[in-house]
Image (cartoon, rainbow over the protein chains, first blue to last red):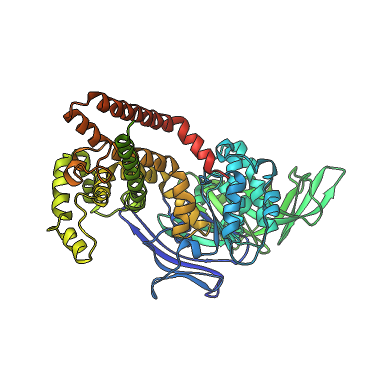
Length: 360
Length: 230
Protein backbone atom coordinates (compact mmCIF):
# COMPACT_ATOMS: atom_id res chain seq x y z
CA UNK A 1 0.00 0.00 0.00
CA UNK A 2 1.25 3.46 -0.79
CA UNK A 3 0.65 7.06 0.19
CA UNK A 4 -2.56 7.18 -1.81
CA UNK A 5 -4.09 4.65 0.55
CA UNK A 6 -7.74 5.48 1.18
CA UNK A 7 -7.51 5.30 4.97
CA UNK A 8 -4.41 6.76 6.53
CA UNK A 9 -3.70 7.49 10.13
CA UNK A 10 -0.48 8.62 11.68
CA UNK A 11 -1.33 9.18 15.30
CA UNK A 12 0.60 9.76 18.48
CA UNK A 13 -0.94 10.00 21.91
CA UNK A 14 0.76 10.17 25.27
CA UNK A 15 -0.77 9.15 28.57
CA UNK A 16 1.14 8.86 31.84
CA UNK A 17 1.31 5.06 31.65
CA UNK A 18 0.77 4.49 27.95
CA UNK A 19 1.97 5.76 24.63
CA UNK A 20 0.42 5.22 21.23
CA UNK A 21 2.47 5.85 18.12
CA UNK A 22 1.11 4.29 14.96
CA UNK A 23 1.21 4.83 11.23
CA UNK A 24 -1.58 2.96 9.48
CA UNK A 25 -2.51 2.54 5.85
CA UNK A 26 -5.69 0.59 5.41
CA UNK A 27 -7.54 -0.58 2.30
CA UNK A 28 -10.73 1.11 1.08
CA UNK A 29 -12.88 -1.96 1.38
CA UNK A 30 -13.40 -4.96 3.58
CA UNK A 31 -12.55 -5.45 7.21
CA UNK A 32 -9.30 -4.25 8.70
CA UNK A 33 -8.68 -5.77 12.10
CA UNK A 34 -6.67 -4.07 14.82
CA UNK A 35 -5.43 -7.06 16.75
CA UNK A 36 -3.41 -7.27 19.91
CA UNK A 37 -3.45 -8.06 23.62
CA UNK A 38 -5.28 -5.75 26.02
CA UNK A 39 -3.30 -2.61 26.63
CA UNK A 40 -1.83 -2.69 23.13
CA UNK A 41 -3.67 0.50 22.19
CA UNK A 42 -6.16 -0.86 19.69
CA UNK A 43 -9.22 0.75 21.26
CA UNK A 44 -7.37 4.03 21.74
CA UNK A 45 -6.38 3.88 18.10
CA UNK A 46 -10.00 3.43 17.07
CA UNK A 47 -11.06 6.31 19.31
CA UNK A 48 -8.52 8.51 17.53
CA UNK A 49 -10.25 7.77 14.23
CA UNK A 50 -13.50 8.83 15.86
CA UNK A 51 -12.05 12.04 17.27
CA UNK A 52 -12.82 10.90 20.80
CA UNK A 53 -9.20 11.38 21.90
CA UNK A 54 -8.72 15.13 21.95
CA UNK A 55 -5.10 14.87 22.98
CA UNK A 56 -4.00 12.90 19.94
CA UNK A 57 -1.47 14.38 17.54
CA UNK A 58 -1.07 13.47 13.91
CA UNK A 59 -2.92 13.17 10.66
CA UNK A 60 -5.98 11.13 9.77
CA UNK A 61 -7.23 11.06 6.20
CA UNK A 62 -10.22 9.03 5.08
CA UNK A 63 -11.34 9.01 1.46
CA UNK A 64 -9.10 11.98 0.75
CA UNK A 65 -10.76 14.00 3.51
CA UNK A 66 -8.54 15.14 6.35
CA UNK A 67 -10.30 14.43 9.64
CA UNK A 68 -7.38 15.61 11.65
CA UNK A 69 -4.09 17.29 10.88
CA UNK A 70 -2.05 18.62 13.75
CA UNK A 71 0.25 20.42 11.30
CA UNK A 72 -2.59 22.73 10.30
CA UNK A 73 -4.46 22.55 13.59
CA UNK A 74 -7.37 20.80 11.95
CA UNK A 75 -9.50 18.63 14.23
CA UNK A 76 -12.93 17.73 12.92
CA UNK A 77 -15.13 17.05 15.97
CA UNK A 78 -16.62 13.53 16.24
CA UNK A 79 -20.13 14.56 15.22
CA UNK A 80 -18.84 15.93 11.91
CA UNK A 81 -16.81 12.85 10.96
CA UNK A 82 -18.78 10.46 8.73
CA UNK A 83 -18.15 7.22 10.64
CA UNK A 84 -20.35 4.82 12.55
CA UNK A 85 -19.10 3.52 15.89
CA UNK A 86 -20.09 0.32 17.66
CA UNK A 87 -18.97 0.33 21.29
CA UNK A 88 -18.05 -2.78 23.22
CA UNK A 89 -20.86 -2.03 25.67
CA UNK A 90 -23.38 -1.04 22.93
CA UNK A 91 -24.22 2.25 24.66
CA UNK A 92 -27.86 2.27 23.66
CA UNK A 93 -29.81 5.21 25.04
CA UNK A 94 -31.81 3.88 27.99
CA UNK A 95 -34.51 6.53 27.62
CA UNK A 96 -35.39 5.39 24.10
CA UNK A 97 -36.81 2.18 22.68
CA UNK A 98 -34.95 0.20 20.01
CA UNK A 99 -36.89 2.17 17.39
CA UNK A 100 -36.06 5.41 19.21
CA UNK A 101 -32.38 4.54 19.21
CA UNK A 102 -32.43 3.82 15.47
CA UNK A 103 -34.46 6.96 14.74
CA UNK A 104 -31.92 8.98 16.70
CA UNK A 105 -29.35 8.07 14.06
CA UNK A 106 -31.72 8.46 11.10
CA UNK A 107 -32.72 12.00 12.14
CA UNK A 108 -29.12 13.16 12.25
CA UNK A 109 -27.67 11.25 9.29
CA UNK A 110 -26.05 13.19 6.47
CA UNK A 111 -24.68 12.10 3.12
CA UNK A 112 -25.72 9.45 0.64
CA UNK A 113 -27.78 6.53 1.94
CA UNK A 114 -26.36 3.05 1.65
CA UNK A 115 -28.93 1.40 3.81
CA UNK A 116 -32.34 2.64 4.93
CA UNK A 117 -34.25 2.01 8.14
CA UNK A 118 -36.12 -1.07 6.91
CA UNK A 119 -33.02 -2.60 5.37
CA UNK A 120 -31.02 -2.12 8.55
CA UNK A 121 -33.84 -3.62 10.62
CA UNK A 122 -33.97 -6.59 8.27
CA UNK A 123 -30.21 -7.06 8.03
CA UNK A 124 -29.92 -7.28 11.81
CA UNK A 125 -33.25 -9.02 12.51
CA UNK A 126 -34.61 -6.26 14.70
CA UNK A 127 -38.18 -6.40 13.43
CA UNK A 128 -39.62 -7.99 16.57
CA UNK A 129 -37.59 -5.83 18.92
CA UNK A 130 -38.42 -2.35 17.66
CA UNK A 131 -40.83 -1.37 20.45
CA UNK A 132 -38.69 -2.99 23.16
CA UNK A 133 -37.03 -0.94 25.88
CA UNK A 134 -33.29 -1.33 25.74
CA UNK A 135 -33.10 -2.76 29.28
CA UNK A 136 -35.16 -5.75 28.09
CA UNK A 137 -32.64 -6.79 25.42
CA UNK A 138 -30.09 -9.59 25.65
CA UNK A 139 -26.43 -8.79 25.10
CA UNK A 140 -26.53 -10.00 21.50
CA UNK A 141 -29.71 -8.04 20.77
CA UNK A 142 -28.18 -4.91 22.23
CA UNK A 143 -25.18 -5.22 19.92
CA UNK A 144 -27.37 -5.85 16.88
CA UNK A 145 -29.31 -2.71 17.72
CA UNK A 146 -26.04 -0.78 18.19
CA UNK A 147 -24.73 -1.99 14.83
CA UNK A 148 -27.95 -1.02 13.04
CA UNK A 149 -27.86 2.37 14.74
CA UNK A 150 -24.28 2.93 13.59
CA UNK A 151 -25.19 1.92 10.02
CA UNK A 152 -28.08 4.38 9.93
CA UNK A 153 -25.73 7.32 10.41
CA UNK A 154 -24.76 6.66 6.76
CA UNK A 155 -21.12 6.06 7.63
CA UNK A 156 -18.27 6.09 5.13
CA UNK A 157 -16.26 4.06 7.66
CA UNK A 158 -17.54 1.70 10.32
CA UNK A 159 -15.54 1.46 13.54
CA UNK A 160 -16.21 -1.55 15.75
CA UNK A 161 -14.65 -1.77 19.20
CA UNK A 162 -14.66 -5.43 20.29
CA UNK A 163 -18.39 -5.74 19.68
CA UNK A 164 -18.37 -9.37 20.81
CA UNK A 165 -16.10 -9.11 23.84
CA UNK A 166 -18.90 -8.62 26.37
CA UNK A 167 -20.85 -11.65 25.12
CA UNK A 168 -20.67 -15.30 26.10
CA UNK A 169 -19.58 -17.93 23.57
CA UNK A 170 -23.12 -18.78 22.46
CA UNK A 171 -23.96 -15.11 21.84
CA UNK A 172 -20.70 -14.59 20.00
CA UNK A 173 -21.54 -17.45 17.66
CA UNK A 174 -24.96 -15.90 17.20
CA UNK A 175 -23.64 -12.44 16.30
CA UNK A 176 -20.71 -13.38 14.06
CA UNK A 177 -22.88 -14.26 11.04
CA UNK A 178 -24.43 -10.77 11.24
CA UNK A 179 -20.99 -9.20 11.05
CA UNK A 180 -20.13 -11.41 8.06
CA UNK A 181 -23.38 -10.37 6.40
CA UNK A 182 -22.48 -6.77 7.02
CA UNK A 183 -19.05 -7.22 5.47
CA UNK A 184 -20.43 -9.01 2.42
CA UNK A 185 -23.61 -6.98 1.84
CA UNK A 186 -22.35 -3.44 2.32
CA UNK A 187 -19.44 -1.72 0.71
CA UNK A 188 -18.52 0.18 3.88
CA UNK A 189 -14.94 -0.29 5.02
CA UNK A 190 -14.75 -1.49 8.60
CA UNK A 191 -12.07 -1.22 11.24
CA UNK A 192 -12.59 -4.00 13.74
CA UNK A 193 -10.82 -4.07 17.08
CA UNK A 194 -10.39 -7.49 18.62
CA UNK A 195 -8.13 -9.58 20.79
CA UNK A 196 -9.65 -12.83 19.52
CA UNK A 197 -7.81 -14.56 16.68
CA UNK A 198 -10.95 -16.54 15.98
CA UNK A 199 -12.96 -13.42 15.17
CA UNK A 200 -10.12 -11.92 13.18
CA UNK A 201 -9.65 -15.10 11.15
CA UNK A 202 -13.33 -15.13 10.28
CA UNK A 203 -13.87 -11.48 9.53
CA UNK A 204 -10.70 -9.66 8.63
CA UNK A 205 -9.23 -9.10 5.19
CA UNK A 206 -6.45 -6.88 6.45
CA UNK A 207 -4.71 -7.38 9.75
CA UNK A 208 -2.81 -4.88 11.87
CA UNK A 209 -0.95 -6.33 14.80
CA UNK A 210 -0.49 -3.88 17.68
CA UNK A 211 1.68 -4.24 20.72
CA UNK A 212 2.36 -1.67 23.44
CA UNK A 213 1.06 1.13 21.26
CA UNK A 214 3.16 0.26 18.21
CA UNK A 215 2.36 -1.47 14.93
CA UNK A 216 4.17 -4.83 14.80
CA UNK A 217 2.86 -5.90 11.41
CA UNK A 218 0.26 -4.85 8.89
CA UNK A 219 -0.92 -6.66 5.77
CA UNK A 220 -3.38 -9.08 4.21
CA UNK A 221 -4.70 -11.56 6.75
CA UNK A 222 -3.29 -14.55 4.83
CA UNK A 223 0.17 -12.94 4.78
CA UNK A 224 0.27 -11.86 8.41
CA UNK A 225 -1.02 -15.17 9.77
CA UNK A 226 1.74 -16.92 7.75
CA UNK A 227 4.55 -14.98 9.41
CA UNK A 228 6.93 -16.86 11.67
CA UNK A 229 8.36 -13.84 13.47
CA UNK A 230 5.34 -12.39 15.26
CA UNK A 231 4.01 -12.63 18.79
CA UNK A 232 1.34 -15.16 17.88
CA UNK A 233 3.70 -17.34 15.85
CA UNK A 234 4.83 -18.99 19.10
CA UNK A 235 1.23 -19.60 20.01
CA UNK A 236 0.03 -23.19 19.90
CA UNK A 237 -2.85 -21.87 17.81
CA UNK A 238 -0.59 -20.59 15.02
CA UNK A 239 -2.19 -21.16 11.64
CA UNK A 240 -2.77 -19.57 8.27
CA UNK A 241 -6.06 -18.14 7.07
CA UNK A 242 -6.65 -18.86 3.39
CA UNK A 243 -9.16 -16.97 1.29
CA UNK A 244 -10.56 -19.77 -0.83
CA UNK A 245 -13.71 -20.71 -2.71
CA UNK A 246 -15.87 -23.76 -3.00
CA UNK A 247 -14.64 -25.60 -6.12
CA UNK A 248 -16.22 -29.07 -6.29
CA UNK A 249 -18.21 -31.65 -4.37
CA UNK A 250 -17.55 -35.37 -4.31
CA UNK A 251 -20.86 -37.04 -3.55
CA UNK A 252 -19.44 -40.56 -3.33
CA UNK A 253 -16.98 -39.83 -0.55
CA UNK A 254 -18.75 -36.82 0.96
CA UNK A 255 -15.93 -34.42 0.25
CA UNK A 256 -15.69 -30.84 -0.88
CA UNK A 257 -12.79 -29.30 -2.70
CA UNK A 258 -11.82 -25.75 -1.83
CA UNK A 259 -9.48 -23.88 -4.09
CA UNK A 260 -7.09 -21.10 -3.23
CA UNK A 261 -4.35 -19.32 -5.07
CA UNK A 262 -1.68 -21.96 -5.67
CA UNK A 263 -3.58 -25.07 -4.72
CA UNK A 264 -6.67 -26.88 -3.52
CA UNK A 265 -7.72 -28.95 -0.54
CA UNK A 266 -10.22 -31.77 -0.09
CA UNK A 267 -12.23 -31.37 3.08
CA UNK A 268 -15.12 -33.26 4.65
CA UNK A 269 -18.25 -32.10 2.88
CA UNK A 270 -19.10 -28.41 3.29
CA UNK A 271 -22.56 -27.22 2.30
CA UNK A 272 -21.71 -24.46 -0.13
CA UNK A 273 -22.63 -23.57 -3.71
CA UNK A 274 -19.77 -23.89 -6.20
CA UNK A 275 -17.89 -20.62 -6.42
CA UNK A 276 -18.83 -19.35 -2.97
CA UNK A 277 -16.04 -17.65 -1.09
CA UNK A 278 -14.84 -19.55 1.97
CA UNK A 279 -12.28 -18.90 4.62
CA UNK A 280 -10.17 -21.86 5.56
CA UNK A 281 -7.80 -21.97 8.45
CA UNK A 282 -4.91 -24.43 8.31
CA UNK A 283 -3.34 -24.85 11.73
CA UNK A 284 0.44 -25.19 11.73
CA UNK A 285 0.11 -28.28 13.92
CA UNK A 286 -2.00 -29.96 11.21
CA UNK A 287 0.74 -29.76 8.60
CA UNK A 288 3.57 -32.29 8.48
CA UNK A 289 6.45 -32.42 6.00
CA UNK A 290 8.21 -35.08 3.94
CA UNK A 291 11.02 -34.80 1.45
CA UNK A 292 9.70 -37.57 -0.84
CA UNK A 293 6.15 -37.66 -2.19
CA UNK A 294 4.36 -40.15 0.08
CA UNK A 295 3.21 -43.12 -2.01
CA UNK A 296 0.64 -44.64 0.25
CA UNK A 297 -0.87 -42.38 2.84
CA UNK A 298 -4.22 -41.83 4.48
CA UNK A 299 -3.73 -38.13 4.18
CA UNK A 300 -5.84 -36.65 1.38
CA UNK A 301 -3.99 -33.45 0.82
CA UNK A 302 -0.35 -33.59 -0.14
CA UNK A 303 0.97 -30.46 -1.77
CA UNK A 304 4.40 -29.64 -3.18
CA UNK A 305 5.93 -26.61 -1.50
CA UNK A 306 9.15 -24.75 -0.90
CA UNK A 307 10.49 -23.77 2.51
CA UNK A 308 10.67 -19.98 2.78
CA UNK A 309 11.48 -19.55 6.47
CA UNK A 310 12.30 -21.60 9.51
CA UNK A 311 12.19 -20.50 13.11
CA UNK A 312 13.25 -22.68 16.00
CA UNK A 313 11.90 -21.96 19.45
CA UNK A 314 13.22 -22.86 22.88
CA UNK A 315 10.63 -25.59 23.39
CA UNK A 316 12.06 -28.04 20.91
CA UNK A 317 9.83 -26.95 18.06
CA UNK A 318 10.37 -25.47 14.61
CA UNK A 319 7.92 -23.33 12.73
CA UNK A 320 8.36 -23.75 8.99
CA UNK A 321 6.92 -21.32 6.48
CA UNK A 322 6.05 -22.82 3.10
CA UNK A 323 5.31 -21.34 -0.28
CA UNK A 324 2.73 -23.07 -2.47
CA UNK A 325 2.93 -21.12 -5.70
CA UNK A 326 2.01 -17.83 -4.06
CA UNK A 327 0.15 -19.03 -1.00
CA UNK A 328 1.92 -19.36 2.31
CA UNK A 329 1.36 -22.08 4.88
CA UNK A 330 2.89 -22.80 8.25
CA UNK A 331 3.99 -26.18 9.52
CA UNK A 332 4.88 -26.96 13.12
CA UNK A 333 7.36 -29.83 13.48
CA UNK A 334 9.81 -30.85 16.16
CA UNK A 335 13.22 -29.30 15.92
CA UNK A 336 14.68 -32.80 15.74
CA UNK A 337 12.61 -33.61 12.63
CA UNK A 338 13.44 -30.29 11.06
CA UNK A 339 17.12 -30.94 11.59
CA UNK A 340 16.99 -34.59 10.47
CA UNK A 341 15.16 -33.55 7.27
CA UNK A 342 17.69 -30.76 6.85
CA UNK A 343 14.96 -28.18 6.39
CA UNK A 344 16.33 -24.86 5.20
CA UNK A 345 15.14 -21.99 3.10
CA UNK A 346 14.75 -23.01 -0.56
CA UNK A 347 14.26 -26.71 0.21
CA UNK A 348 11.54 -28.47 -1.78
CA UNK A 349 9.17 -30.48 0.43
CA UNK A 350 5.76 -32.10 0.41
CA UNK A 351 3.24 -30.74 2.88
CA UNK A 352 0.73 -33.25 4.24
CA UNK A 353 -2.32 -31.43 5.48
CA UNK A 354 -4.23 -33.45 8.05
CA UNK A 355 -7.12 -31.12 8.32
CA UNK A 356 -8.40 -27.61 7.85
CA UNK A 357 -11.27 -25.71 9.38
CA UNK A 358 -13.81 -23.87 7.30
CA UNK A 359 -14.48 -20.68 9.23
CA UNK A 360 -18.12 -19.89 9.64
CA UNK B 1 -58.62 32.24 55.25
CA UNK B 2 -58.97 35.97 55.18
CA UNK B 3 -57.86 38.39 52.51
CA UNK B 4 -54.46 38.94 54.13
CA UNK B 5 -53.81 35.20 54.20
CA UNK B 6 -54.73 34.91 50.56
CA UNK B 7 -52.45 37.78 49.61
CA UNK B 8 -49.59 36.17 51.50
CA UNK B 9 -50.30 32.81 49.86
CA UNK B 10 -50.43 34.32 46.36
CA UNK B 11 -47.22 36.20 47.02
CA UNK B 12 -45.48 33.08 48.31
CA UNK B 13 -46.50 31.04 45.28
CA UNK B 14 -45.49 33.83 42.91
CA UNK B 15 -42.11 34.20 44.61
CA UNK B 16 -41.43 30.47 44.69
CA UNK B 17 -42.63 29.98 41.11
CA UNK B 18 -40.64 32.82 39.58
CA UNK B 19 -37.56 31.95 41.63
CA UNK B 20 -37.72 28.27 40.63
CA UNK B 21 -37.95 29.11 36.92
CA UNK B 22 -35.04 31.53 37.16
CA UNK B 23 -33.08 29.05 39.25
CA UNK B 24 -33.49 26.37 36.59
CA UNK B 25 -32.17 28.77 33.97
CA UNK B 26 -29.21 29.81 36.11
CA UNK B 27 -28.61 26.52 37.89
CA UNK B 28 -28.58 24.22 34.84
CA UNK B 29 -25.43 25.64 33.22
CA UNK B 30 -23.71 25.86 36.61
CA UNK B 31 -24.63 22.25 37.44
CA UNK B 32 -23.54 21.10 33.96
CA UNK B 33 -20.19 22.81 34.37
CA UNK B 34 -19.71 21.45 37.90
CA UNK B 35 -20.56 17.92 36.77
CA UNK B 36 -18.38 17.91 33.65
CA UNK B 37 -15.37 20.15 34.20
CA UNK B 38 -11.93 18.94 35.14
CA UNK B 39 -10.93 22.48 36.11
CA UNK B 40 -9.13 23.03 39.38
CA UNK B 41 -11.65 25.77 40.09
CA UNK B 42 -14.46 23.23 40.30
CA UNK B 43 -14.25 22.73 44.09
CA UNK B 44 -14.14 26.50 44.57
CA UNK B 45 -17.34 27.14 42.64
CA UNK B 46 -18.95 24.08 44.26
CA UNK B 47 -18.19 25.56 47.68
CA UNK B 48 -19.57 28.97 46.70
CA UNK B 49 -22.79 27.41 45.45
CA UNK B 50 -23.13 25.38 48.67
CA UNK B 51 -22.52 28.37 50.99
CA UNK B 52 -26.22 29.12 51.60
CA UNK B 53 -26.55 25.63 53.08
CA UNK B 54 -24.40 26.57 56.07
CA UNK B 55 -24.56 30.37 56.31
CA UNK B 56 -27.18 31.87 58.60
CA UNK B 57 -29.78 33.58 56.39
CA UNK B 58 -29.12 36.79 58.29
CA UNK B 59 -25.52 36.85 57.09
CA UNK B 60 -26.58 36.33 53.52
CA UNK B 61 -29.37 38.85 53.90
CA UNK B 62 -26.98 41.37 55.40
CA UNK B 63 -24.58 41.23 52.45
CA UNK B 64 -27.39 41.27 49.94
CA UNK B 65 -28.84 44.31 51.68
CA UNK B 66 -25.51 46.07 51.39
CA UNK B 67 -25.27 45.10 47.73
CA UNK B 68 -28.83 45.85 46.71
CA UNK B 69 -29.44 48.86 48.99
CA UNK B 70 -29.35 52.43 47.62
CA UNK B 71 -25.62 52.70 48.42
CA UNK B 72 -24.60 49.22 47.26
CA UNK B 73 -23.02 48.48 43.88
CA UNK B 74 -26.16 46.95 42.40
CA UNK B 75 -28.39 49.51 44.08
CA UNK B 76 -26.43 52.39 42.58
CA UNK B 77 -26.47 50.80 39.15
CA UNK B 78 -30.22 50.30 39.40
CA UNK B 79 -30.60 53.88 40.54
CA UNK B 80 -28.53 55.19 37.64
CA UNK B 81 -30.74 53.22 35.25
CA UNK B 82 -33.80 54.74 36.93
CA UNK B 83 -35.08 51.35 38.08
CA UNK B 84 -35.39 52.10 41.76
CA UNK B 85 -33.89 50.09 44.53
CA UNK B 86 -34.29 46.33 44.92
CA UNK B 87 -34.10 46.31 48.70
CA UNK B 88 -37.48 45.92 50.39
CA UNK B 89 -39.22 45.04 47.12
CA UNK B 90 -40.55 41.87 45.50
CA UNK B 91 -37.70 42.00 42.97
CA UNK B 92 -35.15 42.10 45.76
CA UNK B 93 -36.84 39.12 47.33
CA UNK B 94 -36.53 37.17 44.09
CA UNK B 95 -32.81 37.97 43.89
CA UNK B 96 -32.29 36.94 47.51
CA UNK B 97 -34.28 33.73 47.04
CA UNK B 98 -32.21 32.79 44.01
CA UNK B 99 -28.99 33.11 45.98
CA UNK B 100 -30.40 31.41 49.04
CA UNK B 101 -31.94 28.42 47.21
CA UNK B 102 -29.25 27.96 44.56
CA UNK B 103 -27.72 24.79 46.11
CA UNK B 104 -31.13 23.14 46.31
CA UNK B 105 -31.42 23.33 42.54
CA UNK B 106 -27.78 22.99 41.51
CA UNK B 107 -26.92 19.95 43.63
CA UNK B 108 -29.65 17.56 42.41
CA UNK B 109 -28.96 18.68 38.84
CA UNK B 110 -25.23 18.21 39.26
CA UNK B 111 -25.72 14.71 40.67
CA UNK B 112 -28.07 13.86 37.80
CA UNK B 113 -25.69 15.20 35.14
CA UNK B 114 -22.81 13.28 36.71
CA UNK B 115 -24.78 10.06 36.50
CA UNK B 116 -25.49 10.62 32.80
CA UNK B 117 -21.81 9.91 32.24
CA UNK B 118 -19.41 10.37 29.38
CA UNK B 119 -20.34 7.10 27.65
CA UNK B 120 -23.84 8.13 26.56
CA UNK B 121 -22.66 11.54 25.39
CA UNK B 122 -19.83 9.99 23.36
CA UNK B 123 -22.32 7.62 21.79
CA UNK B 124 -24.48 10.60 20.85
CA UNK B 125 -21.46 12.34 19.31
CA UNK B 126 -20.78 9.28 17.15
CA UNK B 127 -24.39 9.54 15.97
CA UNK B 128 -23.79 13.04 14.60
CA UNK B 129 -25.26 14.94 17.54
CA UNK B 130 -23.52 18.28 18.18
CA UNK B 131 -22.89 19.61 21.70
CA UNK B 132 -26.27 21.36 22.14
CA UNK B 133 -28.08 18.44 20.56
CA UNK B 134 -26.31 16.02 22.92
CA UNK B 135 -27.36 18.11 25.88
CA UNK B 136 -31.00 18.36 24.83
CA UNK B 137 -31.50 14.86 23.43
CA UNK B 138 -29.44 12.78 25.86
CA UNK B 139 -28.34 14.67 28.99
CA UNK B 140 -31.68 16.31 29.80
CA UNK B 141 -33.89 13.22 29.36
CA UNK B 142 -31.43 11.05 31.30
CA UNK B 143 -31.25 13.69 34.04
CA UNK B 144 -35.04 14.15 34.16
CA UNK B 145 -35.44 12.83 37.73
CA UNK B 146 -32.80 15.35 38.79
CA UNK B 147 -34.75 18.18 37.17
CA UNK B 148 -37.89 17.12 38.98
CA UNK B 149 -36.05 16.94 42.29
CA UNK B 150 -34.52 20.35 41.65
CA UNK B 151 -37.93 21.92 40.95
CA UNK B 152 -39.57 20.41 44.02
CA UNK B 153 -36.68 21.20 46.37
CA UNK B 154 -36.13 24.70 44.98
CA UNK B 155 -39.80 25.60 45.20
CA UNK B 156 -40.20 24.19 48.70
CA UNK B 157 -37.09 25.88 49.98
CA UNK B 158 -38.24 29.29 48.76
CA UNK B 159 -41.60 28.75 50.45
CA UNK B 160 -39.78 27.91 53.67
CA UNK B 161 -37.35 30.82 53.85
CA UNK B 162 -37.78 33.38 56.59
CA UNK B 163 -34.68 35.11 57.85
CA UNK B 164 -33.49 36.33 54.52
CA UNK B 165 -36.96 37.60 53.65
CA UNK B 166 -37.04 39.71 56.78
CA UNK B 167 -33.54 41.06 56.12
CA UNK B 168 -34.00 41.99 52.47
CA UNK B 169 -37.74 42.24 52.01
CA UNK B 170 -39.12 43.35 55.32
CA UNK B 171 -42.78 42.82 55.94
CA UNK B 172 -44.76 44.76 53.35
CA UNK B 173 -48.24 43.33 52.69
CA UNK B 174 -48.69 42.43 49.03
CA UNK B 175 -45.02 43.04 48.23
CA UNK B 176 -42.82 41.06 50.58
CA UNK B 177 -45.03 39.56 53.28
CA UNK B 178 -44.89 35.87 52.39
CA UNK B 179 -46.48 33.07 54.46
CA UNK B 180 -43.56 32.48 56.80
CA UNK B 181 -43.40 36.17 57.68
CA UNK B 182 -47.17 36.32 58.00
CA UNK B 183 -47.03 33.57 60.62
CA UNK B 184 -44.40 35.51 62.56
CA UNK B 185 -46.64 38.59 62.39
CA UNK B 186 -49.62 36.71 63.76
CA UNK B 187 -47.65 35.31 66.64
CA UNK B 188 -46.29 38.76 67.50
CA UNK B 189 -49.87 40.06 67.45
CA UNK B 190 -50.91 37.14 69.71
CA UNK B 191 -53.20 35.84 66.92
CA UNK B 192 -52.41 32.18 67.59
CA UNK B 193 -55.45 30.93 65.69
CA UNK B 194 -54.37 32.81 62.57
CA UNK B 195 -50.77 31.65 62.90
CA UNK B 196 -51.97 28.10 63.40
CA UNK B 197 -54.01 28.11 60.19
CA UNK B 198 -51.01 29.12 58.13
CA UNK B 199 -48.63 26.92 60.07
CA UNK B 200 -50.66 23.77 59.52
CA UNK B 201 -50.83 24.63 55.82
CA UNK B 202 -47.04 24.86 55.55
CA UNK B 203 -46.67 21.72 57.65
CA UNK B 204 -48.85 19.71 55.29
CA UNK B 205 -47.13 21.25 52.28
CA UNK B 206 -43.67 20.29 53.57
CA UNK B 207 -44.81 16.75 54.31
CA UNK B 208 -46.24 16.34 50.82
CA UNK B 209 -43.02 17.66 49.30
CA UNK B 210 -40.86 15.20 51.22
CA UNK B 211 -43.22 12.36 50.43
CA UNK B 212 -43.04 13.30 46.75
CA UNK B 213 -39.25 13.33 46.92
CA UNK B 214 -39.13 9.84 48.42
CA UNK B 215 -41.60 8.62 45.89
CA UNK B 216 -39.52 10.19 43.11
CA UNK B 217 -36.49 8.34 44.40
CA UNK B 218 -37.97 5.00 43.41
CA UNK B 219 -41.11 4.84 41.33
CA UNK B 220 -40.79 8.41 40.16
CA UNK B 221 -37.56 7.79 38.36
CA UNK B 222 -38.93 4.89 36.33
CA UNK B 223 -42.25 6.64 35.67
CA UNK B 224 -40.47 9.71 34.47
CA UNK B 225 -38.09 7.64 32.45
CA UNK B 226 -41.02 6.07 30.69
CA UNK B 227 -42.67 9.42 30.09
CA UNK B 228 -39.75 10.71 28.07
CA UNK B 229 -39.34 7.51 26.08
CA UNK B 230 -40.61 7.52 22.57
